[in-house]
Length: 128
Image (cartoon, rainbow, N blue to C red; front, side):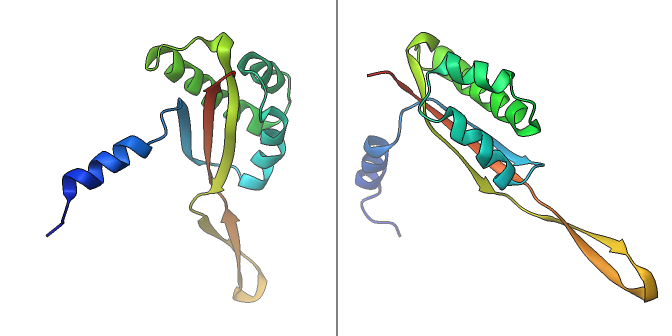
């Protein structure tokens, strides 16, 4: 049986990150394509980051914009914060599961196609 369950849960509760965040998982684009756009908005004020993403032609910019706006809505509705005081503290993506497909070639052979997915996370914080 587990020992000191109440102490352990209290310690987890105290060390939990309370900043507003949003996640998008299993997005059908590779994380290397998302990383290029993420570097542009890191440590920027909320509204500057939104303006940058709205004016970019990349597919990944639209996906990150959705996650960023969701994090802003979470901050406003769940934490009671104003979007004017927020900035993008952390934004990162990780590799999700890879879908494997096959492409039929000559002489009875098969090529493998890897369709990569990624997980996007945006964490906002108050301007100090």
